[in-house]
Amino acid sequence: MIGRKKEIESIKWVLEKKEAQFVAVYGRRRVGKTFLVRQFFNDDFAFYHTGLQKGNLSEQLMAFRASLQKYGYADCPLLKSWLEAFSCLEELLKKNTAKRKIVFIDELPWMDTPQSKFAMWLGNFWNSWASAQTDVVLIVCGSATSWIIGKIVRDRGGLHNRLTDQIYLKPFTLGECEAYAKECGCDFTRMDIAELYMVFGGVPYYWSLLRPGQSVAQNIDRLLFDPDGELRLEYGQLYASLFRKHERHLAVVDALATKKCGMTRSEIVEACGISMGGTFKEVLEELEQCGFIRSYHMPGCRKKGMVYQLMDNFTLFHQRFMAGKGAMDSHFWQHSANTPAVNTWRGLAFERLCMEHVPQIRKALGIAGVLTNTYTWRHVADDVYPVGVQIDLLIDRADRLVNMCEMKWSSEPFTIDKEYAEKLRQKASVYSTVATKGRRGVHITLVTPYGVAENMYRFTPHSVVTLDDLFEEARP
Figure 1 (cartoon, rainbow, N blue to C red):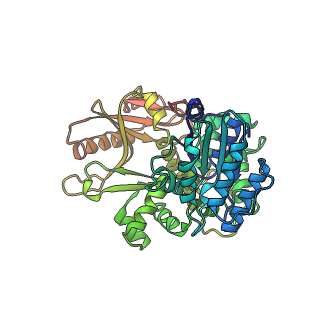
Figure 2 (tube, helix red, strand yellow):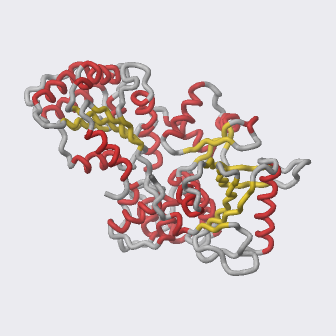
Figure 3 (cartoon, helix red, strand yellow):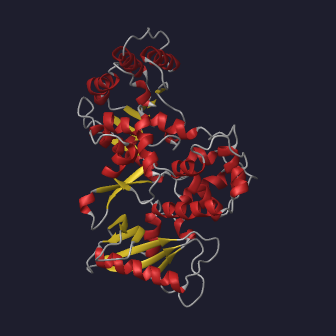
């Protein structure tokens, strides 16, 4: 299995416990949650069931009964409620003689149909019987991360504080994508992998669809721009599978896609034309929980509050090249590979890629063990400081230094000329003056695939991070 070392250790730790265990595994669609659990246990379950997408209560109960029968409850009666369903599961497990009874219920949120009181009866099953058994391990899983967090992780009812462990499965890093691509027989360069990452992110399922023998452009065309491409309709399905009223989430995503550095809540409200109520706050939280957006405070701009930034690579690629385009050239990416529009996208997408690999940047800088905070910062020119500045990544360190990171996509060593050197120094000066009031040292860090070309300005950055550095393992 590629990666997932931390997650596997968590599961092993759970199995070593001598009391009942209740574990939630969650993460975005296609990230490999089901694969992780099934591979680890080699499908050796006392009971395994997957909820039905868009199934009503009767259909969900019918499918649950079929799973009970499959795992040994041959004369299982017809089920009319989740109370009866979990009572039958209890009877099934009582007859099982395994030393450790692993119960895996997948796509749990789909089972919570309107008026079914599913979560209440799941809590009753755990509290009234399963939690008292020393041999039961209940693992629940679902792509609807917001449901798992709201109804299981942060529940204030019957499941409050009942989880013994939770595993949030993140997308692959660049290094993990490289290992996975090799295992699938794809011989890509690291620049190829970086470009694929900027399109698909680190979602394992998307990478599993890549074909050996095809170039990066051919794979992107086949999956996204071909009328029958396997990921042609993925964008709409992605949000619909995660959020029941996904139109609100898409409205926020559409607004954030127009501003690369992010927007405040009031700016999003104005762009979307939606109210500032609790529902809006919930939408932002759900998008952040699923990894589509990130939030951060911008130093020196506290009056504006939190800034929200769209970070999902697949979403941003779709917004830039596919949304609202109608019929498209099935070889669009091959025909557009070196156009100004694509080159501009590569520059912006590389900045995002770097922001997703801050642990690797910190490791390359030798500050992996230093407490840090990361954010984006901008200054609009005014009468006091007439120079406008945008800095996409700042690593604010506990040792009172700040790494001002500039990210530049280049297919060869990047050349720093006199004008760009002055721009870097000016950015550092404005940030130091406006944001830190001169109380922190600012180190210029350049992140670029092949390093810096030799010339008289090459030492303008205090440090240089390369693409190879971003492929290093940095997770604990």
